[in-house]
Length: 104
Image 1: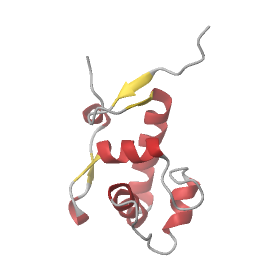
Image 2: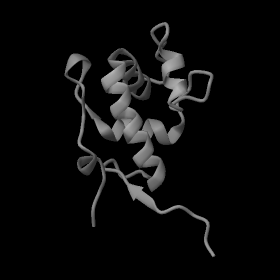
Image 3: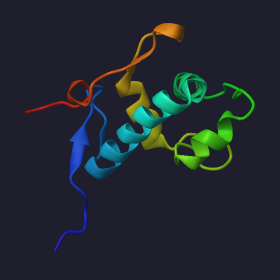
Image 4: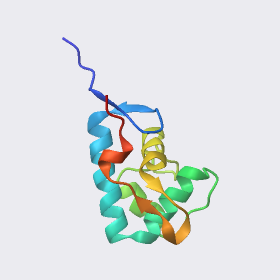
């Protein structure tokens, strides 16, 4: 009996466990709605790993389990953010779920 999770291939070609894709995407939606500054900081951190987070945003990202408690993004979270967010600065948008995954 296999204990491996099913996986999803993102539009970027990265393969991530499906339950992680779904829960992380939901957390991205929540963060974008409730704390747009933290959402922006998350995307910037995913794109530039040496980015210094705006004060107060690290705890918001850690609360939703995007970071490891020391301000570093989990690899799978980074991969999902890079696949799920389009645009720069004020024009950042969260793509619909169906657009971030590859289908057969």
